[in-house]
Every structure is written in structure tokens, then in C-alpha cells.
Image (tube, rainbow over all chains, first blue to last red; front, side):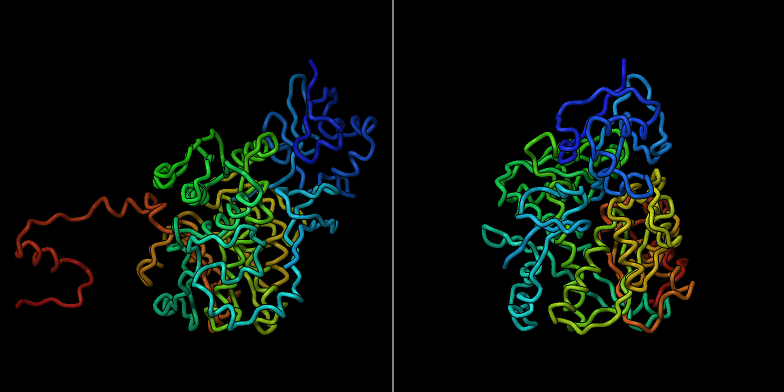
Length: 91
Length: 416
């Protein structure tokens, strides 16, 4: 079983899909690079010039923020669920 | 007046819609105002003649399509803090007291008033929020008054007083296993999957503008002067950012003189990502897992953190954080010196003011405003230990005399 990545809200336009996409990559960064082959401009829109994730984008793996793990180097295992969503945090 | 949504990152403009994210670069959207037109349309006199509520500044708030709401939110007291000032050695200290805001005793009533007015404009029938307590109270209350359905999502470890202060209304309170950041993520997902106005998510550009009214009121209540120093608690970072925006807008439209107005942020040390960012001078905010009993400030990944840091630095301010114990001492100090019972965030702000003074970062003679954002009844459990050893006396005058002669501070001791 591979992992799945889903883009929510306006980020759906990056992959032109509302459905989760199957991925097979060792880590989150590699998954984005892999997707960029199919969806050009994806990494350009998600990553800053220095290669880090834009501060207004959050990626969760099994509902845990990757910034609380190893950021883009966070490992991706079979069965993991990744969610890419805008960062809107505050009451 | 003409208003649009504008992206803070790439400048993309769009008409008003229930969106919070730029479709071009995914940056945050904000309301764009025509300041030149506003400067021509309003004056101190026109504002002063309006009812004493937040809508007196309506030209600087998002346009409301159906007429102004009539819930009297805002115009909370700005109180001269003589006794606290004496304790701190500060000669011009004020408290902006949103602990008595209507209807639910916190500054959240302001942002909710704007959000729900826009929810009605956009045709939503159900509103929701992710909340550490105060926002849930306000959404539940104001939605009840407007006849909107509401769902309020809270971390499952929230203070009982805050939960009680939501369940009383016509709402659904949904406890979520996890901290606020996890609740927020869930609500963001819900906003994308359901036809629900999540006030602090898909209505955020409008919602957040309500916080500016704290800054507007402070200036008007100081006779149209900006304070030299303002100390503001930080959770998501939106309030402090919007107070900074408010001060800037008042100068732009000519309602106050252009001057420096330093803004200082206050956090709990157990969750201080913005304070840390300010102190390090860095560009990146590092999220944290909250570890504090100050739940209303327990947001470990505040998306407005970088903006808050920028506002603080640009204003010449600073940020500090204090322990939970120091925050509780701050609650007590404010109550005992000024008779204001603030919730934990207020205790944090008072304690940070003390810390900044000790560091020499605050000018003790400058006009300074401490922002109290919520009522102490909501976090009363933090000081409940003070009720444990209260004396009980017999219903006899002699019992009273025996007791009162042993207490530490009595201004009279005598017999008739």
C-alpha cells in the first residue's frame, strides 16, 4: 500500500484534483518533487526560494505538522496520509 | 466605499468573497480600503456623534451589506491605572478593559460581530469556529441572537467555565481530542469540505478586521492620541497585528497625528513562538507544542506570528514571555490594584509589562496601555486555590472581632 497526499481548498488547483493522490517517496520533500514531474509549478508555488516550505502552507502527515517533525525530510511510509493545506492558525 | 480583498504577499485583488487564501500565491488575503476617500469622509466629530460601539469606525471596517448590526459591541472602558502605575513606577498607565465587552466579556466579541455580519451577507446559515474558549463563547452567543446555527470546536481540556459559557446558548459545542492547533487544522478542513462559515478560517480577512477597533478606541479615548507604548497578549498574533494596523490607518486618514507608537507582545513561556521570533530577530517562526496552563494563548503554530513580529519590530517594540506562575501573580496584582479581574491572558500581559520595565524596555513616564482581553471569571480555576483556606466564623460579633484582629491589613480596629 502506498501513501496518499491530498490538497485542500484553493491548493487543489495545483494538482487539478479533489481526490487523494498516491505517492511513493522516502520523505515529504521527495514526494513534492515527484509530484512536480506531473504537475509542473507545484514546488515553485509551495516552496520558498531557499527550498523551505512557504510559511503560509502547512503539510500534515497523519495529522501531525511536518514542522514539528523533520520538516520536508519527514519520512513517508506506506499507508501514511498527507494533507497540504493553507496555514490559518489563530482564534 | 469601495473595498476589495488584496493578497498580502503578491498583491492580487479580488471582490469580497468567503475566502481567506489568495488563489494565485496562497498567501493571506486582507481587506483593502480607500484611505484617501475615508480621510475625506470622516472626522473626529462625525465619529464622536455616533453610538458608543465598535461600528462608529465603520468606514475602516469591512462593508456590511444588510445594514449595521445592532449588537452593542465594543467601546469598552479605558481606565487610568493609578495604583498599578504606582506599583510599577509608571505615571501614565492605562488599562483597555475588554473583560467587560458585550456580549461575552472578551475582545472576541469584536471580531465575531464583523464575521457574523459578513456570514449573513454571504448567505451562510451555519457558522463555526476553532476556539480556545472566548471565541466559542462569542460565536455561540452572537449566532444565537442572529438565529444562525453554530458549531464551536474546542480542545477537550478547556477550562470548565469557558465550556459552560458556550453550552448555555443555542449552539453545538464539540470537544476535540488534541490541542488548539489540531482543532484549527480540523476546522480548516471542514471549511473546505462544507458550506459552513468558519469565522476564523474562511471569513478570516473580515473577522480579523474587528480587532482594529481596540486600537481605534484607545486612540479616541486618549483624546485622539496614540499611546507611546501598548502591551498586547499574543496567541495567534492577529490582535497585535491589527492594533498596529489600526494605529497606522488612523494616521493615514488624518484622525491622529503621525507619531511613534511602540507595540509590545506578551506570551506565556510555555508557548512563546512569536516572542522567541522577536527576540531572535529571525525571519522564520518555529512552531512549538504548547506546554502552558494559559490555554487562551496556547497556539503553537500561529500563522500571524511573522506578521506580529514585523509589527513589533517596525514599531520599535519588543516581546517577552512569562511563566504560568508569573501570569497568575499578574491576575492577582491587577485585581488587587485596579479592581479588574482579568483572565489568564491579562495576567500574562501585566506580568510582561513588569518584566519589560525591569529590562528597561518600557519608558515609565510614557503613556502606556495594557490590553486586557478577557474576563477573569473564564479562568477562575487558576486562582481557585486562594479559596481553599478561607476562614469561617460564627454569626456573632465577637467571632468577627476575634477574627478581624488577627488579619493583616485593616484600616480600622476599634470598638463602638
